[in-house]
Image 1 (cartoon, helix red, strand yellow):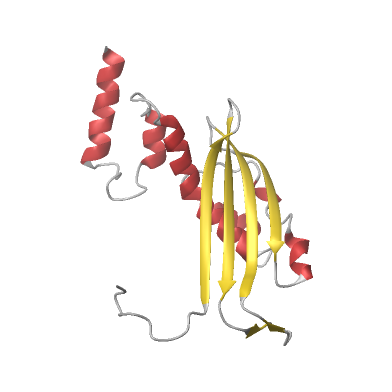
Image 2 (cartoon, rainbow, N blue to C red):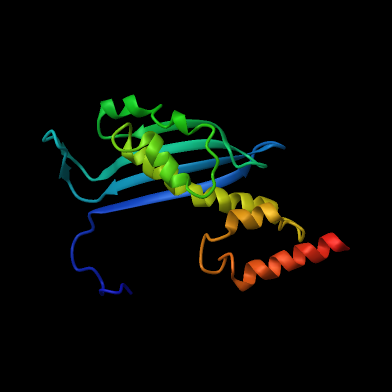
Amino acid sequence: MSLFGKPKGKKYHTRTIEVSTYEYDEQRLAVEGCLTDHRFQEYYLATGEKRPPGILHQMIIHLLVSKTTLEIEDLHVEMPCVPREECLETINSIEQAKGLRVTGGFSLKVKQLVGHGQGCNHLVALLTAMGAPVIQGYAAFQLQGPSGFTTDLIHMLADTCWTWRTDGPLINAVQERIKAKNEE
């Protein structure tokens, strides 16, 4: 049940963002993100064109990310569904993100490099939304065994939420565990 009760009117729009992380090779992870905007009622574009319900935007970003530095080594964009042909002119608008490391401040760096009307706002939204899942995918890769927690992983997770706050009990406990393991 919704906080405000069951919606009484028509559903107009849903945006979904899905991000998946895969093994690519010994050095890199492949990360795929997809943004889809679905309209559920007839609507009009800014040009006055009437459109039926359906997908308005569908954009996919493929990243190759270093397993050691979380640097974006390569990227590729697909735009299977856009409202206007000229949208396709922005397909390379996030190329400048190559070389960025997915660490603290990633979203701000992306917005500074390629946001603010320099390209496609939807690609910027998708790329910034992919930052935290890249870290989660990396953690899932690292934590396949009991010794997966490293100082580097702790630094990546530090201050990402209340539980992982630098002065919190979880980080202190994990650091103590790593320290004890290293002293063995």
